[in-house]
Amino acid sequence: MINIDSTTREAIIKSIQEPTQTSFEEAQKIVYMHMEMDSYPRFLKSEMYQQLLKTVQSKSS
Image (cartoon, rainbow, N blue to C red):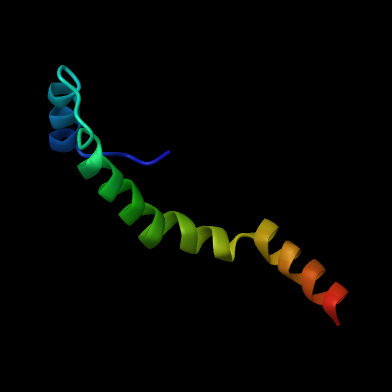
């Protein structure tokens, strides 16, 4: 789960009353930033991913 700050959340709630193609753009930017800075680096360090890498590397050798 990725938290969105209350200011952005309130803006989304207001904008979906009359939605446009850009209603979720700010939230999308925040989600991508959190993924880039937190979620993805943690995934790369996770035991599950590390095991997958070892499996793939041993098969390609």
